[in-house]
Image (cartoon, rainbow, N blue to C red; front, side):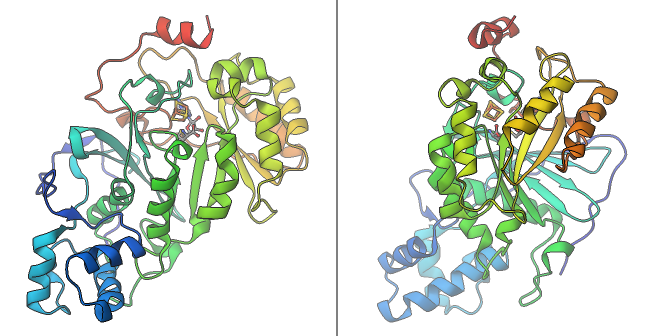
Length: 399
Ligand code: SAH
Ligand code: SF4
């Protein structure tokens, strides 16, 4: 394979990649993001003889997702006239990388442009034992969590399955990680070994596209990531939670963040629709929860808001009986944010109470802060119409 290790570079670098822009609106159909049955149907409709549909689907699929090929001319096990036929009807297009920043800690942030000129952010986080790609599911987010930068972005649209899986493909391009045939490295040695749906957007408000994209990423004949290496984070869209286990089968993380409805209403306003008790009921019933597949409770540490010892004790009581680990996230600041990060001592004391109650309580190390790539800092630079702090406060009843 042609992979090269990510080189942690000294201060911030920026270079603009000019990738060819293939996707003409209304032009040939993009094959990226189609499920296997949809791909088969598309090839059939373009004139592939019925007897060959299955074989051609497998071949084209492998070129796109196993080898990373974008040009039909390079699909060398297809007859030349068939390659020409495909080129006439289809493209293999991924989002355009508009800019790429590398943090001093090696984190890479890509700004990618999708149809309609919208932009979303994708973050690659290299660690010793894994490389995690943080993928976006929407442009902006309809929810307005008061501590989240993305929630201040007004413009929102759902990404297509192709735009979601395309983020993974773009990162693999940049990492040089399209292996030679039959040499797909084991999960743990890959540069891109894990996916977290923790970028911009609420994945459970774009369920079908997220599901199809993750199914493509898990397909053994392609990118081939294990379902256990994919984590979907939701703010608590209760009616869709069970479907995550049933239809995707990946790991689940929940943005919990508060131990009383009063505080959670302010931090995660979706709590007004489905409160803590309803959320916990859905998690207790979560089909896949077990000791080997614990649900991650994300908990952002906000000074003086949700970080007391009493909060820690209440949290333990609330989650009793749920196979869980608690991921403490030091608040990442953004311009105009109405909160401060809890002190390290406070975070450690909080973690200690949870740990002593028998739960893993890792503290998430902020990554890529210097390039605004850390959790909750994402927001496309083009979206300048930011709500003011006062507006956010008014909407959430804070302040
Ligand atoms: N919409 C989904 C996934 C994206 S956010 C969700 O809310 O779960 C991914 C995680 O980052 C969530 O737990 C979110 O609450 C957290 N987060 C958002 N803003 C943050 C900030 N400024 N600092 C730290 N964590 C933040
Ligand atoms: Fe949306 Fe998640 Fe941010 Fe809330 S924390 S505004 S749900 S992206």
